Length: 129
Image (cartoon, rainbow, N blue to C red; front, side, top):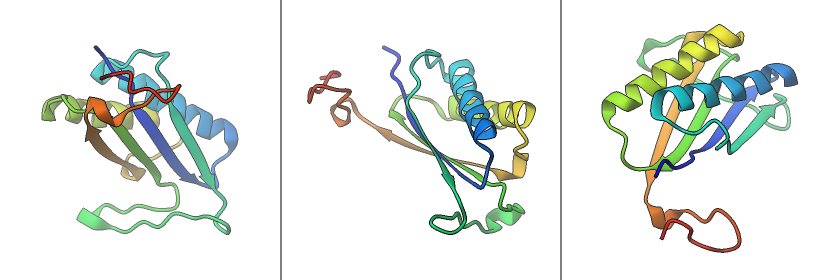
């Protein structure tokens, strides 16, 4: 069974239409790279204003990030290989740079994997158990 991911995307002072395009690009990349159905879209898109909320970034691994950074936090069930994840990272970056104004050096992705017991998709049930 292919299982949806839960995706959080954080940006700083991005126009709403651009943030929507970022969400679309990420979903397309997940569909193409790891087989997530296009309709299994569970995303939280947060646009920080720089005052009430902001983003911090450094130059870890000598990557020159700036305020155009896009943090993408993906939670999904275990089971993808390292190669599938490499393809997913590359596909997300490619889609973002093709479809939005996000620069490749500002695509920051982290994946959290868990098990079937870690999901409740509604009605207080553990649907995967």
